[in-house]
Image 1 (spheres, one colour):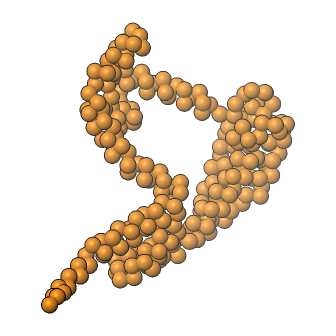
Image 2 (cartoon, helix red, strand yellow):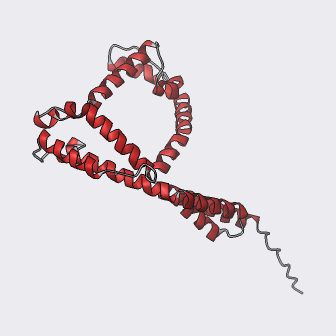
Image 3 (cartoon, helix red, strand yellow):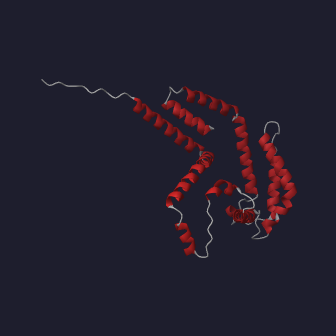
Length: 239
């Protein structure tokens, strides 16, 4: 929201006569001021979440060289929980994180600690679940029994070939007209524009909004130049 407000102020400076963007900028500023306390609470909650990750040495790749024991992690986690005592009335996001941390550590803490004493034992099953997920998606695509998110998005553009060698597969691919392939590729790119924009806006809102503001100012100035009347040609009579 701060990036959006900054971009709107930039547009207002370039086009001060635009009433729509002035009113929109005022509403965005009012929304920022109204939710500033909540944003600060969320920022502090994220900082505590980072402290929890550091206490657990997660992700493991960032702490590969550090010698660690389960007893040390348990002591650090107990100390962190004693220091993490937010006020549920004024710090609701922190209180929700604290409650969830206490409940999960009480339920699964003992099952997590052995990974620090046994070399090579991962602290989670994310990689294994990701592998099984890819296998399930592949099986569903080739069997047609159930749809997946990827199939819902790009399934109507997929083509399946049955070939016994790479040469035979290449022969099948060459039978697809180039114009049809390019047309389907353009449709895929068009379908992904909205998700790509949301991805950029989520990960880098400042640059995304600045780019949109620059595009608007540039297009607005271009339209203004095109709308200017052409100067009349003067006729000079030579006698």
